[in-house]
Image (cartoon, rainbow, N blue to C red; front, side, top):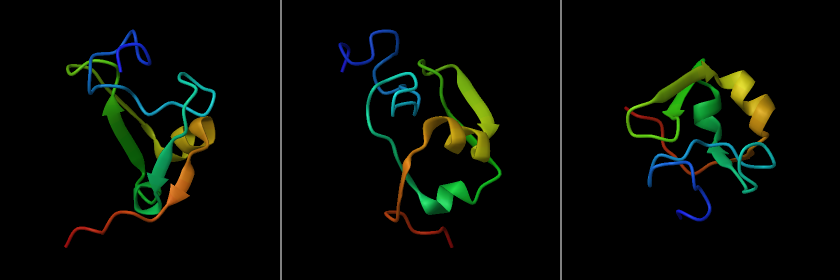
Length: 72
């Protein structure tokens, strides 16, 4: 993992693939895309990025799948 994400702490890699930051596929559950904002690690276990989910989706262009269940 350290070779794939040399500037990130293990387990704190941000979800940027598909030719953006890391050249890896990114998958997202459609339920997450219904949220207004998305938060994720920024390469460390101390730093977090929050951005509009729509902006993240346009930037990353993830494959949308159904693998989660709504809470409740």
